[in-house]
Length: 402
Image 1 (cartoon, rainbow, N blue to C red):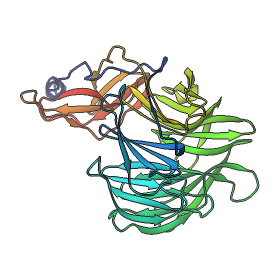
Image 2 (tube, one colour):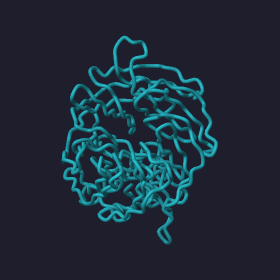
Image 3 (cartoon, helix red, strand yellow):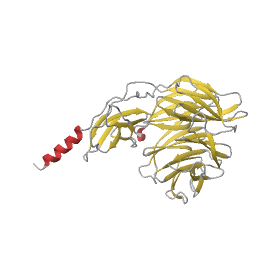
Image 4 (spheres, rainbow, N blue to C red):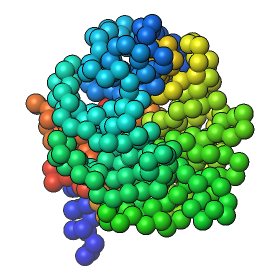
């Protein structure tokens, strides 16, 4: 009899949870990408090699002989991108990332930092002297991978006054998670060759090498972390490859899968990895240890893709002659399931494979007050899962496409 009050309490908590089963935006189909639009850069551009999205705007960087190297497109309707012209004054840009309202643009000898609060009129606020070929932002830090001058960590808590914190080994690419930096570089001991170097950056001013994983015959170039896995786009003699590492132990990456690809540039969104090279390649990574290709379609321009970003049901690929925009499909929406755990936490899940979705919650629908939760999904028992604390009262949940 003593168990009855606890059982009733748990039942009351469960009954106070209200949920919605349909997503606002349809689930993406990745198996048949379709080229729906192309933007052709001007005659003076020798190559376009960077893309970043912010709201309805696509920022494109390139190596330009006369005009500025940063271009802006309105992609509210991805099938009809609207050219809004050039931004800035420098005629060479090699890449761009946007973090909140701050944009970081790679130039030949510096990183240009812009206030992008006005998406159509970003303003330069500072510079960092660097020849970085890869830029990663995280919280209040900026991580720069450079081969000739060496990599580095900066504080950008005040973007108008970036402060150098400490050096990192030289590298082609970099990714950061949970106090560790992963660098695409060579074995610092000189005993093997190229691979992934793990650095402890808990103290950004005093990074220390903690592990190195050799990638035989391959040179890692671009790194992306998604959940507990590290993805590395690499190259060898006359071929390219994709490596996947298990990061369950952050200081001991374990290779679990390798593919031969044509891809030069990589992004991961939801349960898919996308590579742009001679083709747009799509891999189902619901189970990264058993990832497999689901699509491979040739790209339309003269040369392979040099940058890729994916949002909602479209992929945007920078190429030598401009930008290709690809529809990734529009099938039925996923269903959102709700369960409770032993400690009365709310367990929300939806099927794999799926594109990038986030969970939103609202205590009422009249009027709704949807707030995106900070918890990101992980794959558990073949389903995308987010675990949330039990609400004190009624709560509505939904999925939105990102």
